Length: 290
Image (tube, rainbow, N blue to C red; front, side, top):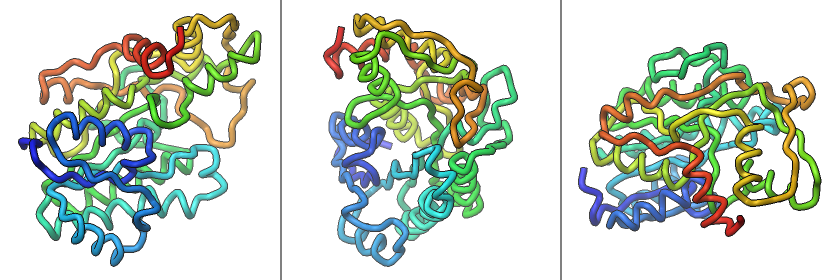
């Protein structure tokens, strides 16, 4: 698919971490992004969504909107499932009616975390947090419809410009503290939002469908990611590793959720750059630190 001149509706494109990067990347690719936020319409209202899509008349529909508050979802299960499980198939139905491609973003948290090798697209989800279960339900509801222009992209540990994220939080804390304790027994694939946006566009250009994993290369723990960010920023703060049991959270995170990128690499011919290189750009160029 040639993106040049295509009208692309991006749900979550105005305020979402990934959505903002998608909007910028689409514009750079010569497409005509149509970024939307919840203020433009309730994605749980099918009639309103249908009228909105009719009015905007996109050639491609991207859903980068989601309920992403992992711990809060344990107390707001109904809302998490509404946004993550119910809304995606409603949006897909609107895309299918118009015979336009539909792209949806999911998460590494659909996995249980009991492997020690990267998860492939063919591994069975086994989430145990409300957030992860709701995102799994969203994927399954989309696949049940069987629309052949559906692309589901799982990503993980997202950071980047435009919205508060783990890296920015860590650097904010490091400004006022001499030491930070960060969990070191959860391993995943950090993902720089602008890189994920570029990867998504490459898949769209290759008319990819089904499920794909897109993240930066390499793996790390939250502790090592935090330490690398503080070092890149040149901050005088000691980052210390702790086990998860010393930092209890309402939602249980997978101990291991590294994503296998082989299918993405085979399809696009692109090997994503290492997370450390992406982190350097984020800390020094986007956040102007270090």
